Amino acid sequence: MACGYSLPHYRPTYAYGDWRGGHDFEYRRDRLRALILLMRWSGLAITDAVTLERQRLSDDGNLFLYRAKTGVAVYVPLPPEVHTLLRSLPSSNPHYFFWSKNGDRETAKRGWVRSLALLFKNAALKNPDGTPKRCHSHMFRDTFAVELLLAGVPIDQVSLLLGHSSVKVTEKHYAPFVKARQAQLAQSARMAWAQTEQKRPAMPVKRKKPVVANVA
Image 1 (cartoon, rainbow, N blue to C red):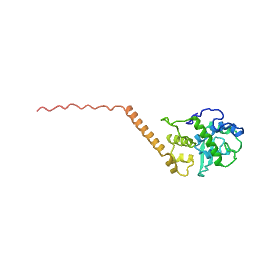
Image 2: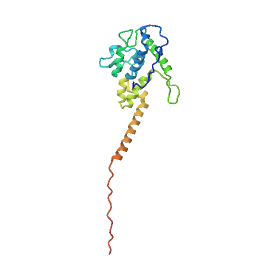
Image 3: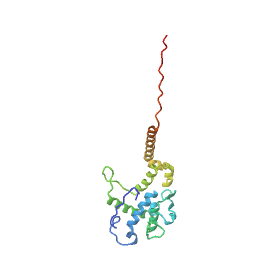
């Protein structure tokens, strides 16, 4: 699946320790996978994703909600396979995808953060130089934003999709990737110049008529 991350298939206990019973833990693996895909393809922060209400997802796969952190409205479409997966999830509370509503939002978030931490530990992701990669839930939101920017989506539109209170916040966090997009455009322009030069027909060379000296 083209999500930017490969999710290995571990035993049913891979993300939360030994299962001790209970509907929530029984389906924890499938729900954790769905949570990751939701954050990757919506750009939602983990608190907004974990406490997402089912009614916030329309029949045609569009999300509409207000961010817990900023109160800013967010409207973003989801790929068909992601919103289909979300709708198929069992949950202990029929009004939410991931939240049982036992405890507050922060408590719910911490539980899923622990599950992600164990998943990252098992996956043992590494940087290109071989050092361990520092993984966190926000990297799915970063992937969502960066891929949009590198695809040429204007930063003000990316800011709206992320639910930032100001485009300046987006610029602060993702300025290097805006520069990377500019570098991409510059390289594309240079390649276009080179192709144009190759296709341009050679100009005919005008031969000068020989000058005949007047003999007195």
